[in-house]
Image (cartoon, rainbow, N blue to C red):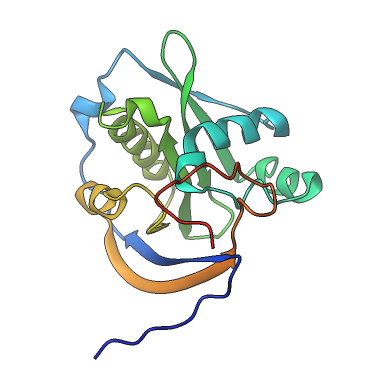
Length: 196
């Protein structure tokens, strides 16, 4: 039996999937061997820089959570010594974002991982994931490595995480104000998600 729930006008609904791994797979040597891209840690990132890269990677997928944060709230996260921010670069520009959150003892959250739309499918995301796992591998003792993604993200996001070794453990529905209606994101982004 199906159930239909009304979503208030001006909001969007998405199914959020939480995934985790309790043991890391062996290193992805082919991904780690790439030399056409490199990952650079950004200590205490400038907020404008971070938001610009966050938009470049996530605007297509309606990434908005970090864009709605006030400067002090965003800085409290990004400047925390237990949060690591990385930029993926090719020879010309920054093309990806990785954010790892080590603030919860015994767990590491893959807070954000993504690449700019024009390089999706190039293996750059696999490179970022392999690099993320190398950083998690350095932790002492058992670690829960987890991530959540949603139906607004790339259609193969869950598949990507499962291939990397994550196991889906929970699904939830999230309803939030549409970020295109309050100016957080442009009205014309994510054309596959109608404005209502």
